[in-house]
Image (cartoon, rainbow, N blue to C red; front, top):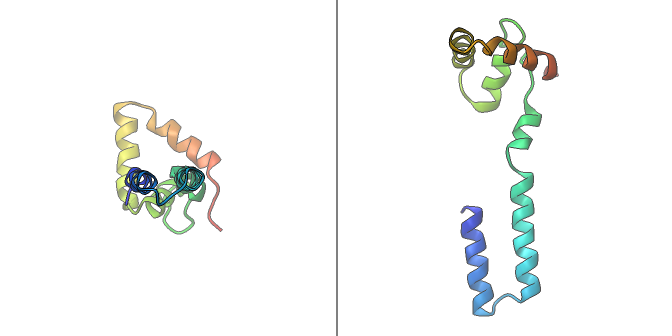
Length: 103
């Protein structure tokens, strides 16, 4: 169930009198806090360069482990960005510098 559906359900319970104003506000705040803390930021902090699936720096192997997409697809995307736009190499180098290696 999505957050909006859960808030709608809480609102219906509040309207029916099953929840007081304070209970509704607390439940809504808890839902919104939970949603805010479990977003993409947790995935970004889990990003690590791979020690096993690497050609250069392990960036594509790490992205593959994090996203579930094969690492060769990430490599192909970086090469396409280098050929077409020219900034793929800069992104790869920045990720190589700033993303820590896995333990």
